[in-house]
Each structure stands twice: as structure tokens, then as C-alpha cells.
Image 1 (cartoon, helix red, strand yellow):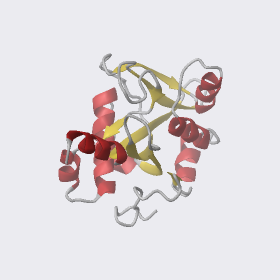
Image 2: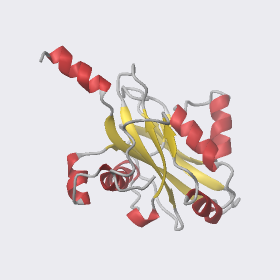
Image 3: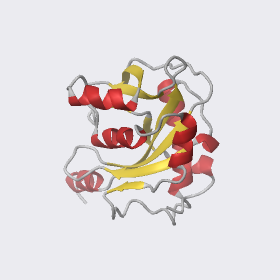
Length: 203
């Protein structure tokens, strides 16, 4: 197989990834705020865009999860990536699985990404590297969506949709209660990369 064939295969097969919506309740307003990170403009995938913490699932995540199933490894990766990108420690029991998005063909990088929401009850300190992550902000979902519509910054579609989904909740209690009973958002709906039964998620 040629080098070009190998590159084409990698382009066709999405890499497995995980991302986390860190959500807190503002002490000042009582509104739900989420943490958005600005990716460096030099990055190939969503360079300069505002996203949730997250990244690729590594082989070490499968080892740490104790097996070959992707869902447990995604949870491990979600915790690791959050710590690496924000300095915030989170636990598996805080994670609520809410979605799975697969990047459409034709883009320079493709990912099949597990989406989690993590309600934060205690104050946290954000520490970014100012390299791959250039900036951060706590912002309400509605404000973020409005700023994106006004072209103040760019949100990838999965980020926009997830923000829209959680914008209806008015407190962390409502958010956690609602998301634990909400259907998982999967894009595309019949994605072969989302295998909840195989991954031990149950849908």
C-alpha cells in the first residue's frame, strides 16, 4: 500500500475522541455558564474556534479503562484532556453522556467524538497553556450562541447544537436531572461509529 493510500485511509476513518462541557452556576447571577476554549489559529482542526475541552482517545486511555471498549476509554480521555487543557480535575461519576458526533467526510481531520457534560459544584481555577489553547471564557449558552450569530467568534456545529440543547436549563440541578433522562444526540443519526451496546453505554 502506498503512502498516499495510507493517508487516504486515515482521512476516511475518524479518530476516536472525547469532549467535556464543564458547567457551573454563576454565584452572581445564578445562570448556568459553560467553559469555552479558543484553539490556536495554527491548528488544522477548528483552528481559532471556540470549543469545549477535549481531544483524541489515546491507547493509554484504553489501558487505564481496563479493556478494549471505547466508551470507558472515552470517559478516561475526557478526564485526562480536561486536566491537560484546563488544569481542572474532574471525576468519572460527574460525567453525563449526552452526544456523539462524527465529522463529515472531506475535512482535513475527522473525529468520532463522545460528548459529556460535567456539572461543577465547587469553585475551580482554569489554567491553559497559551499555546494550543489561546484563551478561555465562562459564558452562558445563550450568550455564546448570540455572540456566534453576531460573528464575534466561531463555534463548530457540534458546539452550537450542544449549547442550544443545554440553554433550556436554569440551574445545575435541572441540567443534571434533565440530561440524565434525555436521549443521546447522535450525528449522523445512523453513524456506524456510535456503538453504545458494544461500548457498554446502553444508548
